Image 1 (cartoon, rainbow, N blue to C red):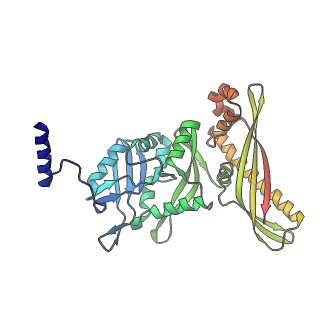
Image 2: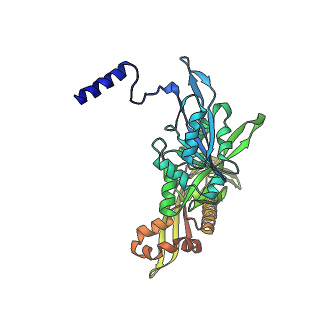
Length: 361
């Protein structure tokens, strides 16, 4: 009898239009956030999020990007505070770009990455960027009415095509921090253009040691990191020859590591980097001597780039490329004896670099 009464009451509630179940929301009732920026404050965290351009009405008329910002002692508190700032339900499930301000990186990023791992709407699949010399809020707002999502998506696609810095997900960076104690993150710099417009420019890579910012790799050092990671970006050699002119572009790079042991003591590392380059331009077909000269020049450039990156990483004791993990795979028993001291051992070792270059026409 009691069950029948409950069923009857539930049916009456539905007929009366008063459902005890959560009401499904229409897409038009929701603000679908795409980009989130997190900054450090002395009192907690500041969170800024953007929807990007939105469609409105049956004709899908353009509507400016919605930007929300809130501060709280915690990331969850700031996200909840945003709900009261919009006449639509704020939904975080579409956030696929995460920007971290430089000041936050100097105080620690793990709490933010951990929140993304635990939250039911957010996730570690979001692309992660470090905003250099500025706040994440400035970067999120730099897109104006059109939002910054298109620019970030373009950088991500360009990275996949090998014409921009290596893009990384929050999950990849979080895993590296947990497993290696260090990680690299692509950096962006807000820069003002004409008529007050602001754009996000590539700013090399931020290197995290533990969960703190150790420093940046840029220029030749950034190119060296890309080579060691097997993801060469725009890496050119423009060579003037006595009677010819040529331009080469690195298209592939692969590095193998071999540890050098004396008993249980690691004495050194040999890094063999094999590089392939395409001949983009030439005035005349290359002679054997010209090919040999260009091969030597490119090998010297690649070695200079890799050594520059390794010198900085060793200085910071930040093995963000997982060389220690490769040592562990080749010599697991010996690795256990040096694992705790690996950061200082890595800093003290100067790897022997072997560069192998081939040129494709």
